[in-house]
Image 1: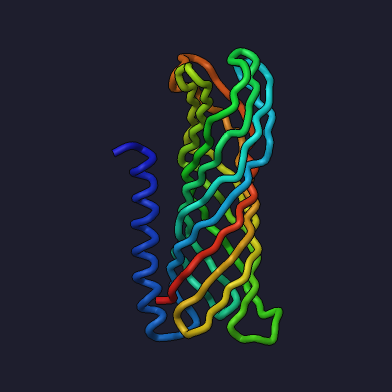
Image 2 (image 1 turned 90 degrees about the vertical axis):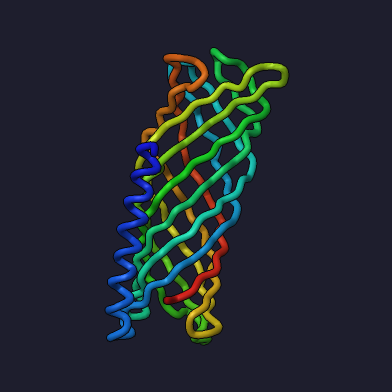
Length: 222
């Protein structure tokens, strides 16, 4: 098992144990409610400058998609703490890297774990609707960038274990006691994305990672 997989499974196992303990607490008091959410949506990776050993250039991307889920705890109706796993992929529109030339196709993908702290409140008269806002500390387990040009071999770069943060604002609609629907907007920024080439030995690529994502989810309180 790779280091990335081991890290992911350790975190997931710890969270499952935490939810098990929280379920016992919930049996005694309704102040704490564990929940599970499955979510997906679309994203836009903002244009970025490109640097590194191959010269300074730029890259632009089209819209992509997200898929993932979260496990968390709701405290006293107002506060939430959750762990989130997200796979994100976006297609490359075009890129210009001086030592490699111009590209009109490719892709950008990442796998990340986040811990989000959220506050929710009731801005409307309907009890079933809650608005939530918050921030998350993000740990990007893996980033892959591929450049394609017709008739030539793919050029690939990858990076591992990069920190970042995200801000979140959204709505939760809970028509019945346990089940809910959510929609949110997330803005994520990663730090120091420094990729090494898996196809060109010794080459390095620096770029920005700024994402705006629209996410929809369905969940259940345990």
